[in-house]
Length: 220
Image (cartoon, rainbow, N blue to C red; front, side):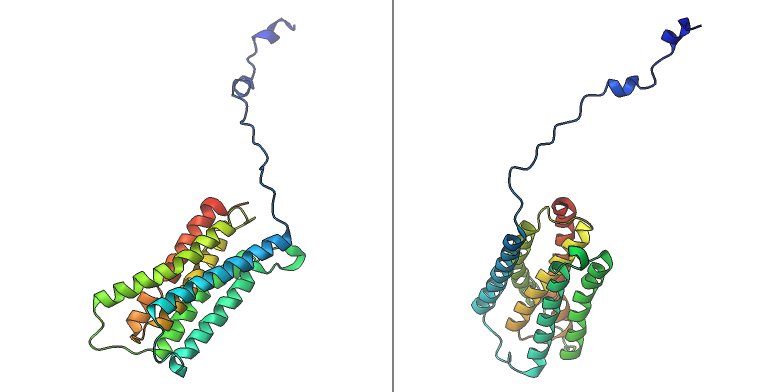
């Protein structure tokens, strides 16, 4: 009765023919402790702010910087930046990071908060500013965002346990908002279209680049 057993094909033969999985070596670089990581975060934030301040100083501060119409949106955007950093970096209960809903709300709140203040404090120019002015301010604003974005990408590499794209987008939007503050402290053109797009371009660019960096290199 058992003579036909040898003729039955092995259903797992194709699994045995597969090559062995690649050996994954443990990382040689030790993970930083929590105090060391906090020092890195603070250092990166200060370095990014110093770069934006330096670039703004090189370009020159606007003459009406102290007027309420200019100072108020800058203060509101700075407060939004600080609140956003708390959302991204301060752990929640049990040491867990912010949830996806909080990150999505932050990614939406940054551009909306910027646009709301721009609508209230700017005017519609007639005729509109020439394209060259928009492009020049956009280039300066993007250069201001470059260093904070690079620091954030290096600092947060392989540090997201979940939702890396959303966490990267939130951090990128905050870097872009910091650059928008810098360019608004320099450029005195209070035209709604110019402020919304030329000054606000780093926010959109930062969110997109941050999402891409988080998805590619952010997961722990």
